[in-house]
Image (cartoon, rainbow, N blue to C red):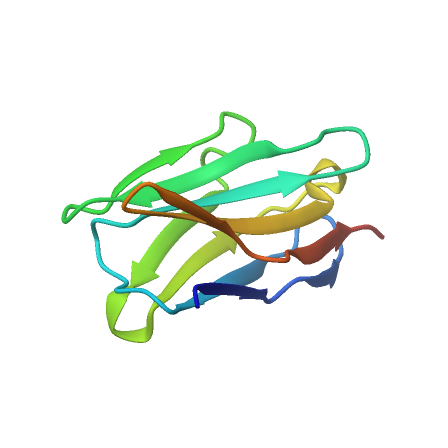
Length: 117
C-alpha cells in the first residue's frame, strides 16, 4: 500500500523558514519517481510548488517561490524535502506531496503551513 506522509508544517512569522518532509512507503522510491509538492488554499484548488525527478535530481519551481524554496530527496530514507525560506503570508496553505509511480498517482494528506505575525 502506497503511503505519502507529510510533516514539518506549522505557524511561522513572515521571513521565517520551515522544512517540510514527505515520507514515502509502499513502493520503490528512486530517482525515477516524479515527486512534486503542491499547495492548496480555500481560494486556490491546487497550485504547483516544486518538483524533482531523475538521476540528476532535475528540479523545477513555481515562479512565486523560486529563489526561496529548495526541493531535495533522500532515496535512502524514502523522503522528499521542501526547504522554505523567507516565507510570506501568501505562502499560507496546505502543502501536499504527490508521487507518480510508473503512471499511478498518489497524494499525501497534507501539512498546514501558516505564515503570520
